[in-house]
Length: 155
Image 1 (cartoon, rainbow, N blue to C red):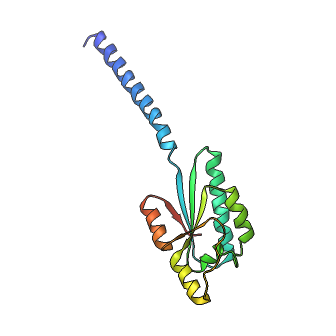
Image 2: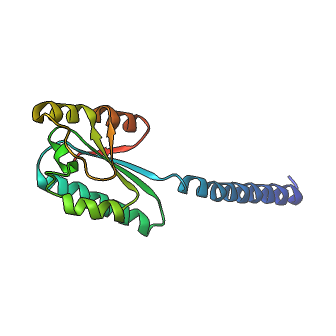
Image 3: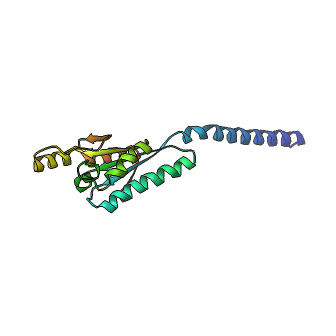
């Protein structure tokens, strides 16, 4: 093969390599804009676990904020964990009120089935803390998120 053939092939290989590098870098921002997604389950009436859910939410939020990345966090409460979201008995009520204001990327969901059970037992619906959403079934809400690729953690 002639020297010209080697030069042409070498230039072609370099150009192809450069093109692939540029294409990979150009595609990177599209991946970076996709937020991280976390579901935290609270199903125990243990105040230490409730505090742990809030600690984890804050730590994960700060971690990704420091990297310039977004994170969405959903806390789903059912069974005994519902107490965390009840205005009249939450052992973390004061922290929850401030938390909702300080962490807009964290949302709280209460299980409708558990609420129905509490209502039947107590004869009245329990009051929820501000900004708590009700989902029909807590476990199904967690499953729906997991099936969409969210990471699920139970502290």
